[in-house]
Length: 566
Image (cartoon, rainbow, N blue to C red; front, side, top):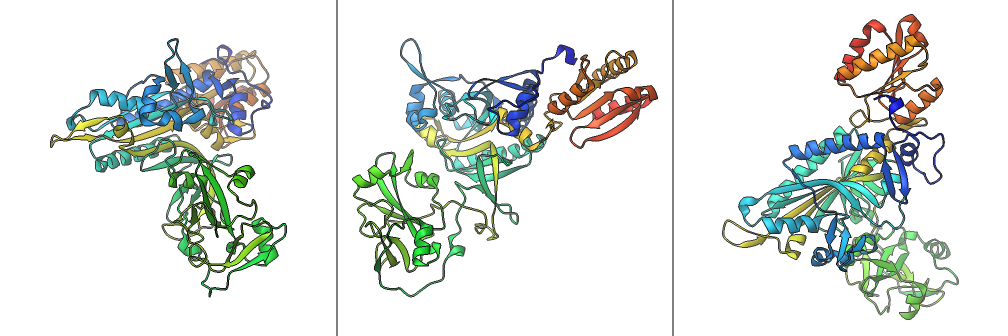
């Protein structure tokens, strides 16, 4: 492809709204352009990268026995109402109404649609197992689209759905997809972790995320360098048994005056006690309006996702000042003793002795509180957010923490959707049973951003060879010099003949501008045809390492053959 006939409008400066490297460089290098918040146009270079990613994903999905389909983007509201997700998805679900007043959703995911297709066409155990996938545009009405392709309102996704006769067989399908995903991300050249994850609005029995390690990632991950355990902090198990305080003899309960002292740090200083012996009482309002109190040790943070999952709620929020007042609770001095709402405790509170809580009275706390003498929680539950230094739940070694970008997510759904939508099959014993499902997503467009987040320098993108828009970039530094032009043209034609994907910069612009564009675009190999042609030499550069190698003209065929084989 000749640059003079191509289209890659590069920019010298990053747009004001671009904050992270992928957003900055994909726009500056002419891969994408923003149409509106969270909506992007893929220019020719960007489209080539997308197709490379799609083809790698498609190859491995096909090899795993998955069958490609294409489902409608518009999905009737009736399907979503069958599973209850019309309300669960809330404001993120794009809802549209046709001229007859019938409601539809722009699909953010397709569990309902694929289950409807299967229930209409599969009736016997002889028709199972099956795994269907598609690569398609999805829509989510993000409250705050940001970071370019990382969090948009329209994005490209590969979603797959497995259907099995039993949970045992569904686990096998799940494991096949888990290994398939590893092969996909390995071929993409990404540094990633597979982590235990929360099932969220998709639901199901368990799930794993595939997370690319990047500084600007939205996912917070804890992992163990010794045994390989890794989990999103929303799903990571807190190993309480190795974080206990030593036992103490019980002391008499006492109410003490703590004027204008309410934070954990201030109370600990005022009473001269370890923050681990301060117990926070947090009042939450669930989506159905129920108020609950949750206790957690002063040095730990409560994980709202775990709270929502425990109560099987759609959402929750900390009680506001007005809500606390309506409940008759004194803000800043909340405690579990005598509280008129259900009290639950994080496992960090279990076996604490002589700890401190609010006294439900302004400027007062209780000290020397003990369970069950002074109060008794409904249940002890893991509500803690995992953090670096916590013991690994598998091997007990200290966990490390990192940030990452989720690029893939797999779920063992069980029968959540098949039971709700009556997707049954007749087993070999003649009995009707619900199909057991799994679902598997990969963010195709997000993978483009993830690759750039992991592969760039101060000058621009450094594409992994597997998804680069072209493999070779030829720069003719002075197109008006006939010798330079003729040699560059000859190399360009030979590269095409050998089947090498090549971009030939034949533009009549300065050498500096060509080098800057080449660095921005990030094609893996670069052949520079310049002044050294007088000595019968060209220069080969590798973008990832900045290596330069002089090559004699008589060795060009061998060089191109080498590039073809790499």
